[in-house]
Length: 119
Image (tube, rainbow, N blue to C red; front, side, top):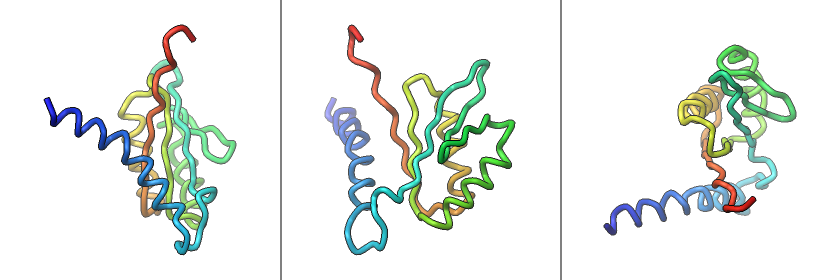
């Protein structure tokens, strides 16, 4: 019973540790320079990635998305992928893979929690 609780706590704390490490002074850049990639699910089963105000349908616009990621990776070594609870894991995984391929040294991901009951 302890192992799942410890694992759950580790998963909850890792994104916070990642953000704190990225924003620490002396690293030469600020937290605001972390590139944020937002994911959503576009029916029927396609992923939509938003980067810097532009939307990319994945996998259809993968080449354009990769070019945009490469451009942003030159300015910042860190990226975070965020998505809601309905976004499939393969969207997360593929986007993390593309971000690493684009040249980001560190890529984190954060899943948004479900809304509280009654909202």
